[in-house]
Image (cartoon, rainbow, N blue to C red):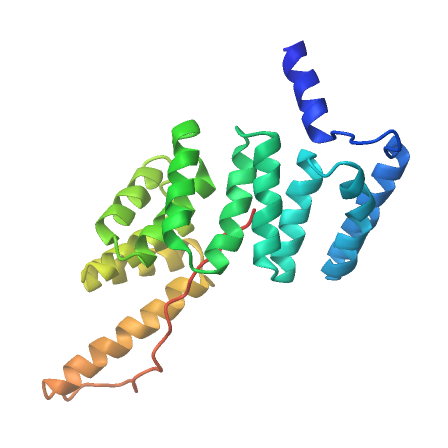
Length: 238
């Protein structure tokens, strides 16, 4: 255990010169960064950490945080770079892999997201975000039956989790099982009445049903078709 603690301390901050920052300087840099982030000023949140990064360019924590901040700023290539550097410092880190998935998801790099998700599951089979993002990636790749299996696996341990219920419904919808998907979305609204995903897809399914009824000459149509809802791409949070 003592060896593990020493390894982590070394990995978190690896000095490269005799002019490394003091504990107080590092702490104050992080505090300023958090304050800027809270106000939505990601550029200055990044700048506040630059002295730490220059002293510890291979450090785990500073690269992990820079990966997050560059992701928030929309600079995805830089975000990937720093998350990968964090992984170089601690290759077994699950949180760094989860972080790396964020800029990849933002760029619709779904095969890479899928690969990273499976990497996480080898370490932590029921990891919540690893499985959620795997389900999303599989759906985006139109591997609907595989996505359904992931959602069902997680619902076996989190039966009322609305994220995985939505994932199950979306996977079923992709498989053409509209009525089954509609029932699940309706159940989601019992658990979470304001759930945006469930409400939008129920509106879309109702519109499709109304159009199909009208096409068959139905006379009891009471609703106008809603506008087509674009497929939402849930991005997940680190």
